[in-house]
Length: 171
Figure (spheres, rainbow, N blue to C red):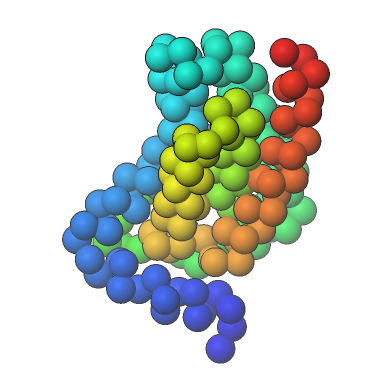
C-alpha cells in the first residue's frame, strides 16, 4: 500500500460526513486563486491589523507564488490527479493544471508565513488553521494526493521564506 493510498483511506470518513463535506468543499472553493488569502489581507487592512501596503505585498507575493507553482513546478512534474474533477460528493472546480505540487497547499503555506510575519501570535494560529483546512480540503475532495499536499507545503514554505525578507526590505 502506498503513502497516497493510505492517506486516501484515512480521509474517507470525512468524505462521508455531511458537515465535513460542506467545510472541505467550501475550503477548496475559497482556496481557488488564493481568494481566501486576498480577502483575509483586505479585511486585515480595513480593520488596521495590517497596512494596505502589507496587503498589497501579500497579493503580489501570492501572484508570484502562483506563477512559480502553476506555470513552473507543475509543468515539470506533470503528475496525474487522483480524479479528473474530484469526488462526486463534492462540487469543486475542475483544475486545468497537473497535480504535483498542490497550489492550494503552497499558497496556504506561503500566505500563512507572510501573514504571520505581519501579525505574529495569536493571529498566526488562525492563519495556520485556515491554511491546514484549505490544504487538506484538496485531499478530501480527491483533487490531490496526500503527497501533492506535502509537496505544496514545502514549496509554499520555501517561497514564503523568500518572500518575507523581500517584503521587509521593500516596506
